[in-house]
Amino acid sequence: MISLYFHIPFCTKKCPYCHFYVIPNRPAYQQLLSEALALEWRMQQPLMEGRPVTSIYFGGGTPSLFTEIGPLLTQIPRASDCEITIEANPEESSLELFSHFVQLGINRLSLGVQSLDDRSLQTLERIHTAERAKRAIFDAAKAGFKNISLDLMYDLPGQTEESWAFTLDQLRDLPIQHLSLYNLTIEPHTSFHKRKVQLPQPELSLQLLQTALERLASLGLNRYEISAFARPGFESRHNLGYWTGRPFLGFGPSAYSFWEGERFRNVANIHKYARALREGQSPVDFREKLPYPAHLKERLAVGLRVREGVNLATFPLDADTARVIEELKRNNLLAQRGTQLQLTERGMLYYDTVASEMI
Ligand code: SF4
Image 1 (tube, helix red, strand yellow):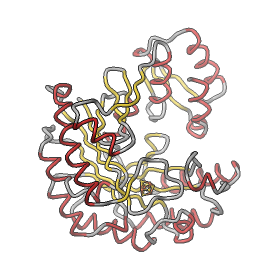
Image 2 (tube, protein in one colour):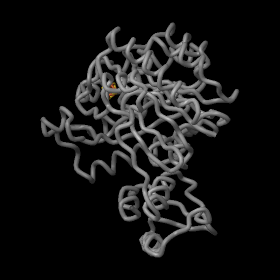
Image 3 (cartoon, protein in one colour):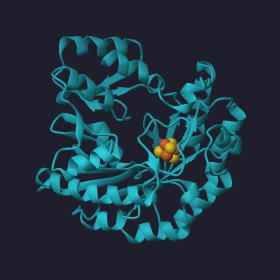
């Protein structure tokens, strides 16, 4: 089984915290991307032969802005129960657009809501309001989406517990099945970074996370991965693939792939990406195949993100990693039952420490 990821880089406006490769939504870029994706699709055919596609993810950017999703999807042979996700932003959504996606066979929607408090949305300099976001969620349900996921962000500048609780409390009335929860990080080369925007202190940050964990549990959204919550049966198949090492191919500028133990990335520039493909060249500008034991350590650290953990019987551990695991167990960050190793509740809170110790 394999997964496919399509990076569609269009955005109406660049958010000040965004570190993804995004470009304005212009007809000329739409055309360029459409032609280049068709060439890349043809180039990668030999790799995919005989490998059933279990999930497809249109991410970005704002893939819902791409006018060629339909023609692209029709080319992809896939398992009948294939999970097909598209990301969308509330401000560019409508009942009509969502109905179109449902007709195309897209069965999962990921909405970039980020907050249901207008003050926080203004802090993030998002275009949409909380009301607009809620309307988009109800439109999606009305259009027939039975698997709707929201992205929410916390740890925002000036965010208080009350403002965060205000967002979380509104989830109760929404027809959602999945939620991805991110803390804001200030990445280099972003506008927030240049402006030296300050984030909440670690104590408040932990408190905000704990508030979210309590509220989401009370709504029946189970934490099945460090940052992902779902009603039973709605865990993201695509994302579980990333965390458990399923091979995936990425298409589009800046898209990553993981294939036969190698990670590679397409050039993050639509012109270079399209030119390479037009000339029959690979658009990949970065490749990495970690040697033993580094690749096992990385797989272990990523696999531990999932609540059920990893089966150590499938990891031929070196002495150094085995020693680190014992230390993390002593510190109540990891627990082992038989050969299954998983994060403790404390380990879920301090996953970054576990991962950095491991790698
Ligand atoms: S909408 Fe998403 S992808 Fe686009 S600029 Fe904002 S954060 Fe980045």
